[in-house]
Image: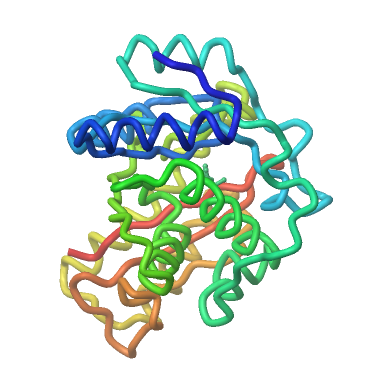
Length: 276
Ligand code: PAF
């Protein structure tokens, strides 16, 4: 596995792959790799030569958030990726965002859901992902569905700018108990982690209620809110919307998605479930 830290070298690496008629798959990450990232890499490898970027992007953290303490373990991450036969680890310096004056926003979608609680977050995400796309010039890029709003926004950005990169969504990987894999789960002690599993449990019960015939968005939303409160979570939001984030209707439909963010023991958790 090649490890690249230099922007020009990364550009050249990608160019060489393309010259050799290879497709480039990019998996952007912030490191501290877990089973969810491994699934992204496994998917990416099916599509082309895989480049995994590791960059904890300061632009997407608010000053009161956990940028400084965000879990990092580059040696272990490099070992994992090398064992997975990834073609390249791109580990850029902070220069890629330093002195940035041009930022990307999506006024319609950046400010809703997550954006209400993290107003600058998606501007930071879109800006850094665009930079990574400009450097690595991928044919395919892979994003986990746990961060559903992020996936939708990046897909729209790629379409809006005719980027020629295909955005591939990848299923959320969960612990046995249902808790979505997240680098931030390391913040939990064993006992609290067990209790955090009730987050997905509440979403699943709500999706089951829908499956059992309850279609009223209002009733389904009240149900999930009650479940979450009873399990000890502080709720940022719990919303049912169509899969394009266009909003909800009076009656939920198959293919709609329930998105939620909660806080538990100082950790913010994000998850979602499709109604099927
Ligand atoms: O999902 C993430 O880990 C990050 O938001 C991303 C896409 C790597 C951008 O920094």
